Image (cartoon, rainbow over all chains, first blue to last red; front, side):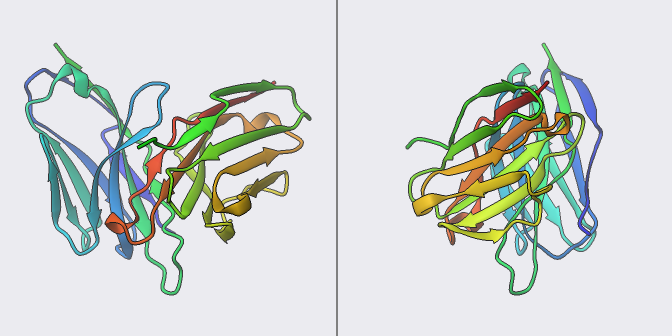
Length: 116
Length: 115
């Protein structure tokens, strides 16, 4: 059974700092991994998707890496800004042979606060 | 291009009543997913439609939940009768098969409170 864990649960950093959010999963048989951002009372915004065959994806100040063999992904945020304050969620899509569900299994998230 | 929309944004009902949630996916997306987050827990998968067919309903908690996707467009999720433990936020997501590795796009969610 696939389980996703995110550490730390909460993080507070001063503006301008570079930071890393961690995600681990128990089963390396995945189709892809997505990082999302959720603002309070809002839906989920997709940040980056990494296919199982990829090692990393970049979008602006965000860089996500994937090490499938060790069951780990990291989300690197460069030069953090107060507007980056939100909850960051990691989700994996388990791979099942002959099954095209593509459902996502979520971690509990990391709540990030960037202080001005 | 409009994103995934959900209606209502909030619903407050009493135990034993019926509630129907609606999701309109991104136009052209054949995959539609329902998820929910109950208090203090992770977001959990409920079910997956491909067009109008249920591909995977392994996450549906019990037979009080009924999902439909008539015509392969919008979807409804009905809870009947509602129980206290059904309170939470219900999210809908959609994706297009074969597009960017089936990246899922989420709606704003419906917050359901059962009193």
